[in-house]
Figure 1 (tube, rainbow, N blue to C red):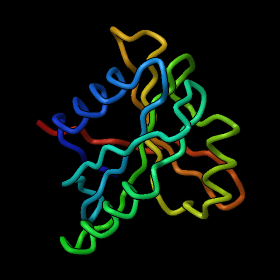
Figure 2 (cartoon, rainbow, N blue to C red):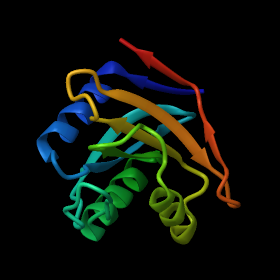
Figure 3 (tube, helix red, strand yellow):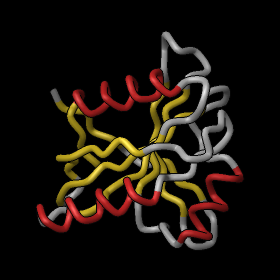
Figure 4 (cartoon, helix red, strand yellow):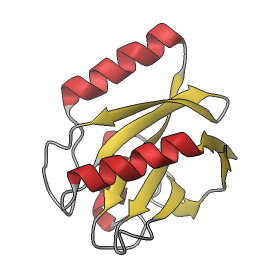
Length: 137
């Protein structure tokens, strides 16, 4: 089970509002399924329907996690007009990038006042499984 502090959830929500109407994206890192760091990443696609992580931001996050001896745990992004469920594009991008050993956080802003956050794993065959999330204070 993945564990994350409410402060990180609040940052993801704020990031999604700041980037609206486009999708936001970012990285969560830590150890032993406990999130300890968040990296807000530019969405170079600048699209309400997909995201593409800025390569410099991704490399900076990778260097910082290595320096801190922590790991990428999850990628997050917002869905601005749809449910918090991986789209066909999300699955295709996960498979093409080879990132199938990571959790995918999705925050839906279909109703911006009541965002929905869900997390998933995407297998090498493209199967989607909802994962459990523990939110701490």
